[in-house]
Image 1 (cartoon, rainbow, N blue to C red):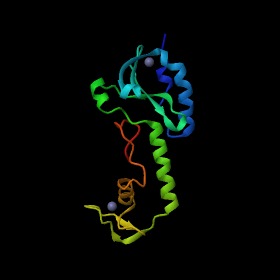
Image 2: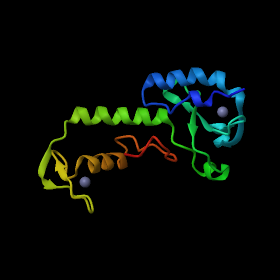
Image 3: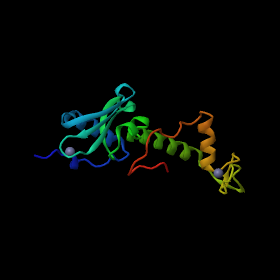
Image 4: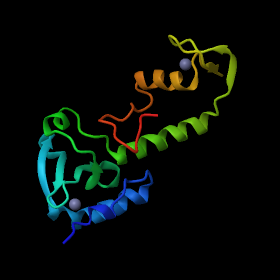
Length: 159
Ligand SMILES: [Zn+2]
Ligand SMILES: [Zn+2]
């Protein structure tokens, strides 16, 4: 008998992928062993009892706050409890908000250098910063959402 874990790849950052996984999750949960619960069960670390594959279960607030499972690397539960893995649904929302913002603003580089410490990029029109530092400054001011919180894992990365 096999568990079916190998049938599931990483969630690609498209809305349909998250919706599909939410549906699949309701059929999958029985095969798992709960290793740890974070923040009263908002996130759970699970292990397949057959193949030892680790999974995290989290809630996708933009999809009706439904739970869904995604594969994660093996980890000690106390380490994971300090910082659960980043959620693909949050990455997706964050990326699309940033894309919208960048598209709307059509940033054009100027001759002058970015004023952020140690940055050698060109500043963009209407800012003293380059695009990245301009966005960072707006994140610090609470105008744009902060970078997604959590422990990074492949295939996702902070940039
Ligand atoms: Zn398995
Ligand atoms: Zn810069």
